[in-house]
Image (cartoon, rainbow, N blue to C red; front, side, top):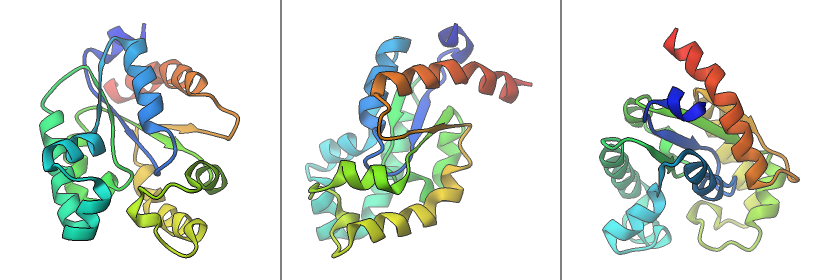
Length: 181
């Protein structure tokens, strides 16, 4: 069904930190018989540093360059579900890679993200006195970029990764028909 319609194209999951791109991506890849890639994990593997260390030692700009390089390399493959870093949409150039696949925006309200990210010290952009305000600001800056995705999946606090995966699979055929037509 969905797999034959996809014809091997990659699925890029975009959205805010904490929305569940990695968890849902793993489940979606399993359902589709695809392989799974997390760009943040690849960046850490390639650089030999954590994302937090890259931000602290080299700055966000250096991290974004690494992110683009990793994206360009994984985009060369097919049949991948790719969980991207939340800020991958910030560089216009990255869209030249994202557009070669199906871009799915996992969209959760800030309240859900705050609940999920409470106490997470691995997120450099949340190391503020008011992480909730930081999330709201970041979402405000990125929302119009995320909205350029092919498919938007609304997520609430009760949704399980399995339910989200099922929704992506159910809604993909209508988006693929639209983009093919």
